[in-house]
Image 1 (cartoon, rainbow, N blue to C red):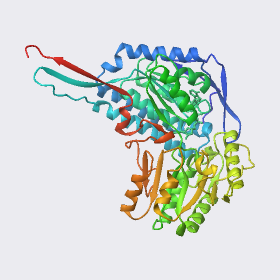
Image 2 (tube, rainbow, N blue to C red; image 1 turned 135 degrees about the horizontal axis):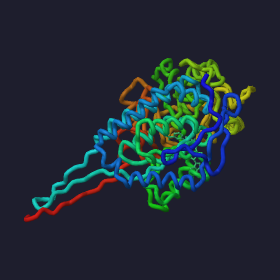
Image 3 (cartoon, rainbow, N blue to C red; image 1 turned 60 degrees about the vertical axis):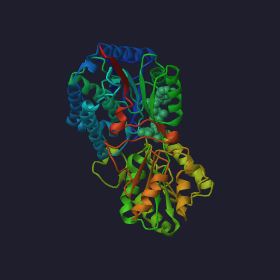
Image 4 (tube, helix red, strand yellow; image 1 turned 45 degrees about the horizontal axis):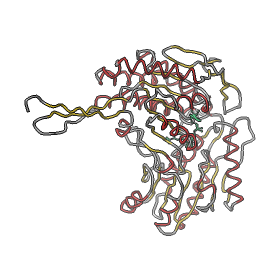
Length: 485
Ligand code: NAD
């Protein structure tokens, strides 16, 4: 295995630099050991990064570039990630815990964002609006300027890629605040920016604590747009800070998403969806299938299948899980694991039944057994609270409208799913689910090309797809009075 550098720096204005707030230990959740240290930025470091990004934006270098050229540079960053895929995936697996094969998939997914948004760079056309013979009127779409991007620890490579690629493709400069628990794999975005040749200050990485560097970035008067992916509480804090400077936000927050399983569903085929839906990344997925609402006639069969999936997973350090398959790594930290265990205990005390797992594993690291809770009632805490761990809650329904009511019964609205062989029923259910996207017969169906975002407390704005581009530009209308008319 590659030797791990013991200390990692921030990337500000084209230089790799220390942080004024010292260093943070990065812990390997697969064994509890310290992997390395990372520089911690304070508000002054954040200010230097923002001023650098502001200077590059004001120079016009990105905005004046022909979009196809900008797009090619964005795509070259994706190619850089592919060229360094093994190194990045190894570091991601070590710092975050996910199986190495999942980390490989994540790096490929990150590169795909640069490919897709690089392609889109030259598609942002304006329109001409007829105002009669006396005028010529047209619109242009201009970048906001400095895009501030605050990243969570669960998919640190993909989440940074998602916002950074769209921000650059539309001509913004970017200050990224990587997550303080998993900042190491983000370093390759700095290396990619250097290798592609963006002007110094176009891409900046300022890792620091959320309450310090994150808060300073979101409240900075010289940022022009914020993209945040993370928890609801932090999203509210960031949106409030940005509002004071009248800066727009995209918020991608949590979820408590439900799969509705009808009596005619193909449960054998759905096994893959259950494994992917709730056990990928040890369930630390905003769009996880954390609830299944199954028709009472299929309840027993579904539970039997879900339990056998949970019990068949090989759980252990992600770095040892190199091959695609039925395996799972640790959670991000012992604190997150213990929070999940206490939510499971609370569910049991409220009357849920533990059909699989539910306990912290007695090995070093932040491991939780893959867990299936049954006899969950919609009013229980577990039915409404995001666990952000490998914990599936199974509920039942009798009438279709009851299923919809349960599915829509949380404050979230990120994704939903419906499993049925009846396309009319699927379409009707999909229309009634209050969520930004609905999966029919395949959990996580879609891709970089399909818009993604929340209803309700799951956030607002869309990332991915062409819809994402509109969050990174503002429309300018230019009306010209023609002489002699
Ligand atoms: P978090 O909100 O604690 O942290 C996310 C980021 O925000 C980190 O970089 C952190 O340092 C920063 N931060 C924390 N406090 C801040 C503050 N006051 N001001 C500015 N920045 C601050 O979230 P997390 O625990 O890292 O991630 C888990 C949560 O993220 C879950 O709720 C999950 O559902 C959600 N999530 C959503 C999506 C999505 O696309 N919708 C994707 C991944 C994660």
